[in-house]
Length: 322
Image 1 (cartoon, rainbow, N blue to C red):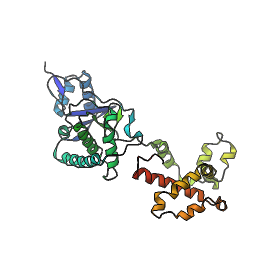
Image 2 (image 1 turned 60 degrees about the vertical axis):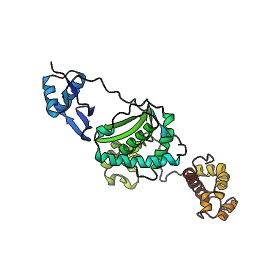
Image 3 (image 1 turned 30 degrees about the vertical axis):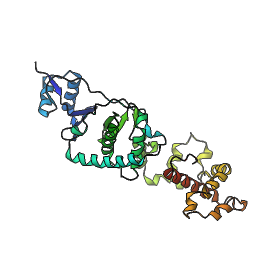
Image 4 (image 1 turned 180 degrees about the horizontal axis):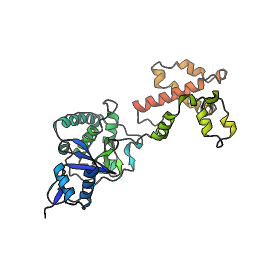
């Protein structure tokens, strides 16, 4: 009896009745739906009948040959190496990371993904040994646009790590509606990506609900936030529901300034902003006097202190004083 196997250059991921496939030989994605997706799922599970095999042969998804063992799959990531502050990147690695990304981008136009993703055969590295390279790529994003460049960045990082004899996993994930993303992993640790930023209030159900409410309902009865007031009636105290002004963090900010104002002024007086002439040092010296209290100056000083800390982080990331 003839045996068949999935093509070596084909990768797939099933989503219910749909399957996203990646053809490494042509570097393209395609979608299987309905019977074709079901036939592929049955073939992978070893329960395909003659009809399913005939369909998959017609589609060019399987070929004659002994079924290969399942390919190893990267473990589910549990954290990112970029969760925490990175060490200062060496200029040599920074240069290599930028140069290798340009090479990878050029190679994508000349070579198939199958050729570019050939296994390195190197022993698996631990995340700590990859820290310096990961820091260099993170810093390179300041000088090279990283938008929609995850595959280029992944190929380049894998190539540089391979020079040091470090083997890592290049993972390509997909989802529906279709989107694809590439990242580098060392064991359960992601090396090339920071954790995703999730905004719960911008989730699709909430956005759709808000957009479905007619604008004239927002001020029903001549009161702003009428929809929110109605939604929380019986849940929140009437005192809150009847409020006509918004709360303010000013008292909290004043408490922060009372505790940290002297340290903020000290940092600013000897800082980059004064050195660059952005802030008048005489104004800072006068800010310790008491006759200006409650005029909002404390907020400006704290804002300047935040900007000063940000500048120092970028210009001298090894300085822990900020």
